[in-house]
Length: 281
Image 1 (tube, rainbow, N blue to C red):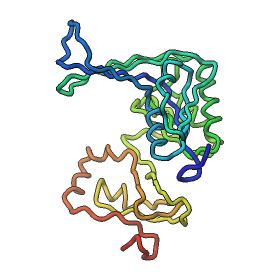
Image 2 (cartoon, rainbow, N blue to C red):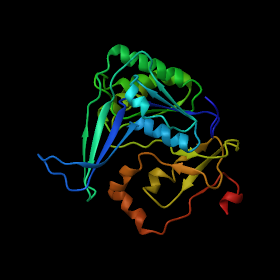
Image 3 (tube, one colour):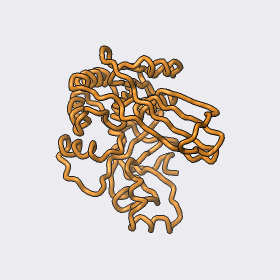
Image 4 (cartoon, rainbow, N blue to C red):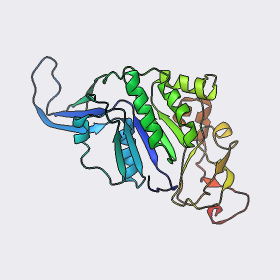
């Protein structure tokens, strides 16, 4: 993989690829009737593919691993950013599911999602091997979307364990709690709680800065536990214009203790590394 912002790229796995079909109507959907579509749009999709496409468009080298080969799916990937590599597993052929969205003039949308092909144990092993190979030298691997039929609930957990030797960071992007619990239990020995907090993600265009450890200061979410009391390591330093993203913070907006932070003026976000410099002014 060629270099990106931090000298390494990002690999995504689209566990259950889909061809997303959007059907646009010029009248409300009439159940049981025949209607003509105004427009039909199709694109190759799935969470991992969508993430890889956005990263590549933003200048980050990305590899999108697909667990099987589908010519109809690949044909819809004809025009992609030059730094996006699509890597379907060779020798494993299946038909991708089709997810259909029917959109009415009011904006109301009805979605019908297919389950996707059932993958065998050999299919899953081949996909795991391809992912580990693609992850060699990568900075991040994103395991994205719902699992396909045939995959056990702990498949993502087993992939994380297989990726440990690569030294990359791993993100699991799925809304299915049954796929998350085995990860915490098998990989981290985690005892399930109501919510959890992971380290912030630091996005910078200056990867050669000096490492610092510092606290984030802000006036949002629950400052006591989310920001002020957490010392964060920034291996590339911090520069004006950098982005700090705090995953899983959305749940705190439903927390009764969080509402107090909205009653005070918003503070400027700064980093204090121990001595004043330009970023503190």
